[in-house]
Image (cartoon, rainbow, N blue to C red; front, side, top):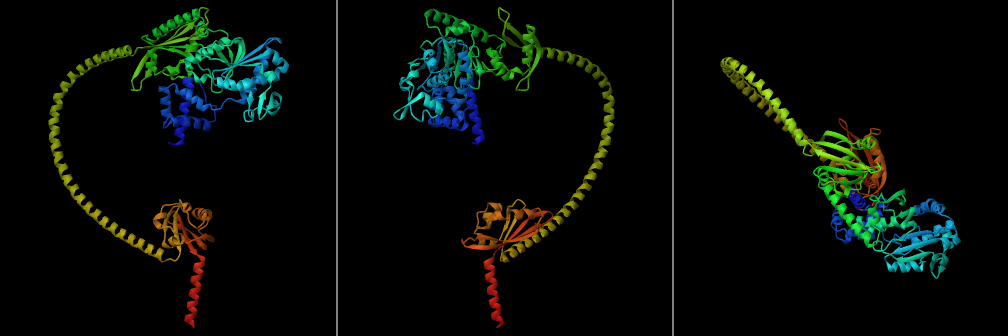
Length: 631
């Protein structure tokens, strides 16, 4: 598998996590994230990200293990520093400004683990209020279900590594050295209250100004997240703030919270919540029974809507798809995963017809918009016809809640109408054909008589055609003889070419120099035996290989520019002496001559290579022989 295919599979996995659980990990470093997910799938002996995505769909409990693997050691002081800086510079000052000087400030750190984020909150607020005001006004409730983590948090002792993310000036101001560990200031520690709390079973802490729950929601499924978020909504004061982790987006709960800064995952409470959401956080039996009755009614309503015989969808006034019937899912290939998605992101919003502008028109005119015979092309090349009705949904106070879109399949009626029109046209055509048939019958007799005459003429033509075929046969025989002659000439030329090649090979072998011929792509086409003797590579090992890819004692890179100049006709001949190492490992001085090989076009370059020392030795020996003969 290529790296591109692997990256694409991984991105699809991240998209699935975002759509199925609402957690966006795209802000995390890709290499680290992929390494941690790969570690998890290796433990399960799964081969790739595609199979792991299938595994997640079948085993939803795997999400917990995956998130634990991804978020190893993620709790820390000032984790995601930019988000804490935004909280300190924009949110906390605004929170304090809207309170009276004597009003208490209540904060809840849900899922606090070993307490680093709770103490980070204490530091930031103490910096704004001052230590004295902090002790008098601030209560930070830090909760978790892990008793071991809470015990560590209550000790408030951290190693040097744990507090390395705390700026030096804050470290000196808020931590005391206890042995080889750092302890949070005891006078401020009293304002941070730790306790065990189950987000699902225990009542939420109330009258909160700020609720911090970073990367805790991702351990729960969508339904449970809704219950927890409703409890968070209940616990916050009017316009209270919710601070989540980097991977948490609240895509499906825009009715409870609205983002102040989505990048840093800071939201504010929306004050108006329906009774269904409030019932999620009540603990007494009356509200529980009301919740069950309401739940049954809602299920009954949903089932009734789901089973209607037409395709119908409902979009709220923020553009989110909130309901769709079974017919709509079947007709437009929608799934449950598409619920809570922006309608504009769905193909249905613009195909088979642009619906977004029509929805705006229905909102503006506050009346249904009807469209008839909308054409929709199916995958089997057939056409479907739909009547579309876009109906604005208004509350009792005439506020627009959203829009309902119904799709009536009228293909059967359109096809029936077309069939009737075709039948009428066929009947009219049949009458015309009957009239013309009578006229044709009258003329047929005349045509038959003329046909007999034509047949007689045709017979004579056939006889002449036969004679022409005999003439063509003779011409073909002569052509065949000419082709045999040409074939004989080609055989003779082939023999001559073979002789020429044999002579060329003999010449190359007789030369006492290494001869290498390379083409215009630097690939070797000739490598004589002296080149083999010099560099230790056989001809069959180098033919077709690039001269620059050879691992020989000749530094071929030094020849690159000269070879390029020869191929570009800047130089037709160049010679040089290069330090090299022959196949026996002996350092030599190699004489290299580079000559341009020309044909109809530039064919390549000839390299002649000679061991200078060897040639010198041979010349000296020859001189000695000649002197002896003279004596």
